[in-house]
Image (cartoon, rainbow, N blue to C red):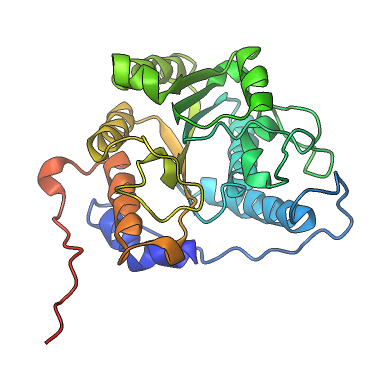
Length: 290
């Protein structure tokens, strides 16, 4: 239901108002892979493999027409959107960079995840870690140094060990509180520009503090403020480097009168050029009973 929530919240209109031509390619259809094999505790492995293939195929075709925006839903979506971005970058002979805006590192492999939930694995897959034999093998791995994670505040032990021995750039909320969010973001964007890279941005609802974005099943207090989030998006827009975008982990059942969906739409608009003087004011108050 996540994609429809974004539509209802006005994502197409917000982008057409900025002068873009928006094409809604509809919801992707999944054909589960009943032959997929992996650790027994994995949740919906065959279905996730099917989604990954479908998203990668649909996403790759969308790149030739413009900037794809992938809407969800479970962050396992990024297994497919990231694969599409990696494939397209390879056809352009350009390196792919990934900006991960998330409370979690999503750096588990199918063998290290204790929950079995594959939404905790996309970055490990995209960077070429072992254990993803069930998934598409035709992946040009993203180099560790081409990945930046902002907003961390919940990292499992196995992920922490892997991150600390990698070249991934990661920044938790304490660091952001102490030194700000602009410096690490600009440093990363400078690397993208210098390499003539393509930039895939994956925005998870739980990057934000749950006080302003409650519609997520994995809430972690202490996230980015509204102003910090818009600043990140405005800096991304200023850079003109973003070539694809995920809007993920929106669970409409947990929302409050659609306000999380609206926040995410506003952030997407900021990433694509909206500025404070263009931003509409939204009311989330309900009508009082007569």
